Amino acid sequence: MAKLRIAVIGLGRIGKMHLKNLMILPDQFQVVGIADPTEENLQAVVDQYHLPYYSADYHELLQKDDVDCVLIASATDTHAQIIKDAARAGKDIFCEKPLDTDVARIKSLLAIVDECGVKLQVGFNRRFDHNFWRIHQCVTDGSLGTPQIIKISSRDPEPPSLEYVKRSGGLFFDMMIHDLDLIRYLSNSEVEEVTAKGAVLVNPQIGELGDIDTAIVTLKFSNGALGVIDNSRQAVYGYDQRAEVFGNKGMAKADNDRNSTVELDLKDASKLDKMPYFFIDRYQQAYLSELTAFHNSIVNDESVMASGNDGLRAVQLALACQKSLETGQSVKIVY
Ligand SMILES: NC(=O)c1ccc[n+]([C@@H]2O[C@H](COP(=O)([O-])OP(=O)(O)OC[C@H]3O[C@@H](n4cnc5c(N)ncnc54)[C@H](O)[C@@H]3O)[C@@H](O)[C@H]2O)c1
Image (cartoon, rainbow, N blue to C red; front, side, top):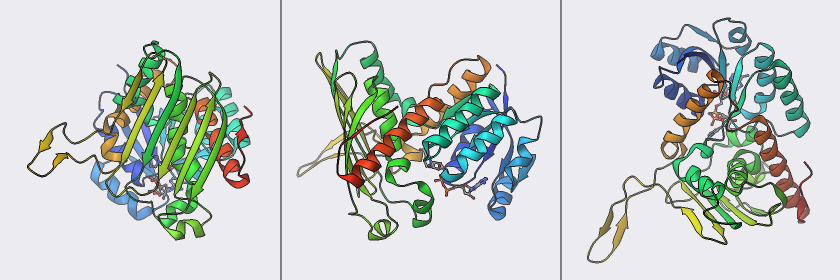
């Protein structure tokens, strides 16, 4: 199996996690470099992992012949430019979600990726989760019949920093983007119309930045099904991640993963184990699987499982949600 030499661009919360995961996939990847403009941060990581190349400027890594591919985990507003530069340098690309928040910019970067003939996989890790993959399989093999109702609840245990919120693109682009992709994946259908409601119920400072921290979106699909997604930036009990597909032959639902499946029954109460606190714990298996899938798609020259087009579709839906929130009207999706 060919080992790919990879550089990680952006070493914040998720970049560091991906770096650690790449290190535990030594048959598939060799990390050869990292780039992040925060010097102090970089030096600590380089010392820890003894990496050959590092730079504050990612362009330097793109010039290296012994970099086969890149993993982009920098701030959202840098993704489009880095993707274009990496594609032009002939590197295969794994990029965190969202690709960008602007449809024209995404279409332009997809054209460049296409022209350069490199792979582009988007970090929609939930497609690789064991539970959600199983529901997708039940829809695909027809066990549930025709999907009629699809429900996703997705709630974070705590809001991100205000600094992060400022560069995130807002709740629909930063948080619900995962659920907008997942609901397409679970339904095997395109969304035709969305209606969004939003509120600031967690932190007024998020509202002062022009964002929301709570949202409910209803969706109509081209196969006739209806869907609903709810998001909150703060669930006091942990990272709440559930999904359900109801069809005319049955229903499949994934409840929260817990640290164990033990049910504890006591004299006055019954208890379940806690759910994992946040995304790094909850989706550890999915984050590893998405990297393995990226590796396989490159070495076997196969399609990626979360494509640039999937990234575009999710952003088109996020834009429609934003418009619906602003106008108070349902919004039809123009693809
Ligand atoms: N798939 C997931 O579950 C998931 C989870 C969290 C974040 N994300 C996405 O990952 C991205 C990063 O999120 P985060 O939480 O790690 O943010 P973060 O703020 O912790 O880290 C971002 C990092 O990017 C670096 N950076 C900024 N400009 C750069 C540039 N030009 N070149 C290289 N590095 C640059 C910053 O210095 C910082 O270290 C965002 O797009 C976010 O939407 C995905």
